[in-house]
Amino acid sequence: MASGKGGVGKSLVSATTALILAKNGLSVGLLDLDFHGPSSSVIYGDLEMPSEEEEGLIPPVVEGVKVMSIDQFVEGRPIPVSGKEKREIIKELLALTHWGETDVLVVDMPPETGDVLLASLTYLRGRRGVILVTTPSKLSLKVVDRLIRLLNETGVEIIGIIENMSRLELQDNKVSPFGVDAAKDLASRYNIHFLGSLPIDPEASLYADEGRADKITSTRFGLELEKCLKKTTLLD
Amino acid sequence: MHELVIVSGIIEAVSNLARKENKKILRFTVAVGELASFDRALIEELLNEVKKGSILEDTQVDVEVEKADVLCKSCESTWGFSDLIEPLGENEKEMIHFLPELVSSFSRCPKCGGRDLEIRSGRGIRVSYVEFEE
Image (cartoon, rainbow over all chains, first blue to last red; front, side, top):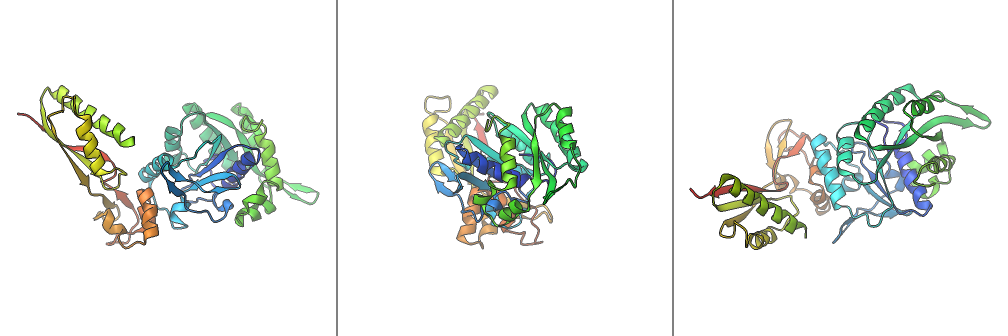
């Protein structure tokens, strides 16, 4: 899961995606690589430290999802690491973690197109694909546009684009505070699958803040995201 | 075994060096980083085992532990990694043991208080010395 841009709800989309895939019977891992703001793991409540076994570090399992985040190691402390250290940590995390039999590993990328993205493209091999998350805002789309061009050069499959925060539903009124159709237009310009748009959902945000991973998939946000994922090979 | 793969690579690399220089190697030293998750004694045992039957069979091999040093990029002072983490609790030390690069989350430069810390040595395993026959 990547966007290049911060504040588009990527962590909530990543965390909920992992929960939806697990709910649909897949064996799923979630790796939060957002060094400076690891938050997808927050949605899973207070995570235990991974346990050390002979095979490596075993991630804790929440709602069927194996969760690994830098935050489990630093427990809320600042993470003032620069590029070289980030690369080393990613390498170590991937080498040390024993995911076991896993169908899908959801990786929550930080809002950047630098060290973490490049290191992930280098070290995460095999069948891989990127789901891009954006808001309808032009600011966000501009950054995603750049990311698409970078990914196209690397030959990594772009599974599709999800438009988050597309509308706010107030009783019978739908408000689109950041504009309409721009993400769809971007997808069409690059011939990328537009997977759908997600509402601003205060209920999902509340559950995320409270670490209620058990509740998020049944919110409006969760149900709409499931529809998006059903358009991909992950859940078709 | 992870160590066996590493050791085989070292023996191959040093053998290639001997061939390239067209000289006999009398002794070489392998430096095992303090932060590398390798058992020094096991590395030494495997090196002596794997070199049997190779062109390094009669070569003396020494294994030393390379101390991990941390550079504070703010004031350019250097600290021993183990000295930096010494004041920490057992739980914190265990976390750093898995991901040493997170040292800056737990420790600050004792001189300037900075957190722009970089591990400069003691991270991996390398051949630190080679002595050729004259």
